[in-house]
Image (cartoon, rainbow, N blue to C red):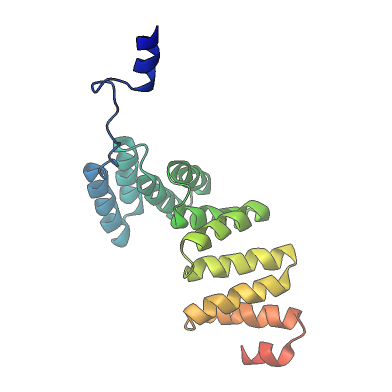
Length: 187
């Protein structure tokens, strides 16, 4: 009885688990994604989606494969398929800033503002210099009626990338809502 108790406390060398090694990146899936990216750059969006589907089949737990599939599906107008792909990418890697952003962007367009705000917050927590996420978050805040937060989010975006004309336009609109007319005209 004492031996059984000791064996449970100190397993034999054979039973002792080895430290887990992080899984190697799925090389075949990465090749398919690269081929899909080239097809997408050439304007062959359906071919790109087919390659991304193969990458997902090859590595179903690989967030990057699901993310690229979502981007491809969104590009061909399949918003529902893109939503599912982004959700799956987040299930595989909840910290992926791009999966958080892409899903939030689609959700905000559908009016699911609370979840979009949370996801954009996640994206910005992982990648504070994510200008596009700041811009989409400003739209979410504006739609929620939090105009001051929308202005602050646009200010953060414009500090990072002052060359985005659309952000300046949105900033002017938000400043006008805040009765900061002089600043709105300047923006």
